[in-house]
Image 1 (cartoon, rainbow, N blue to C red):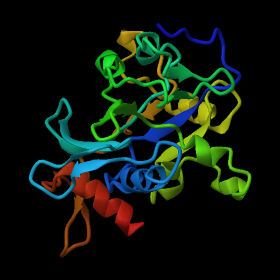
Image 2: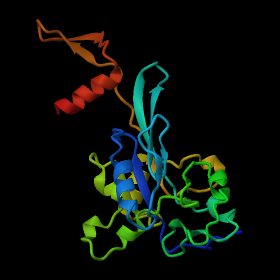
Image 3: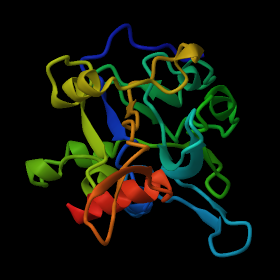
Image 4: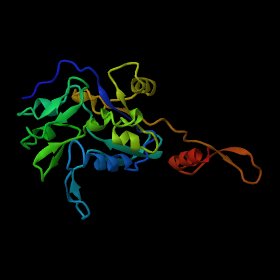
Length: 248
């Protein structure tokens, strides 16, 4: 079985703001594009256009309808990828050392030359972040675009994961979450960022910023008199919020 480093020099990871993610899938698409020609290439698609699409994707977006205690509904978009855990079960179950965690920055990677495709890592990962490439016969996963973030041929501002660079609403952020003074760490502290499934004990490095609470009772403006009343607007709260944001 593969051992973990006693400590890492950094804890590079992502902070994802669920409050503003619009579920556009830009992160998933650009991730596919970048990695199809990069460190983990190829990312095989076995049936990309049929009724039962299958293939290798490092980023996946799930959308949910959530309801608060007052019965008000809201659509929540939840991006999912590898969380580069401090205590990754996917690494410690690997029988060949193919899955490993880097001591210098905490990134979890797969050495495909050592991978035998046994899928133990995918069974051990509770987040469903491992991808089996049926054509290549090996496991693959998010690399935090390791071939991009250290690429000195790129401008420094471009040395971020492709998903971060492509997000149109700035819902994704990248940095050292092991540094309490880093921009991403301060963001997590200010917004009370959370781990995904902390009860599992794997200590994910990536954090999620929870949605902010919305106003659910807004005064209605009378069209004739132009006066506010104390009545409750029957418009669904999510639509009222979108209308307010777009009107700013």
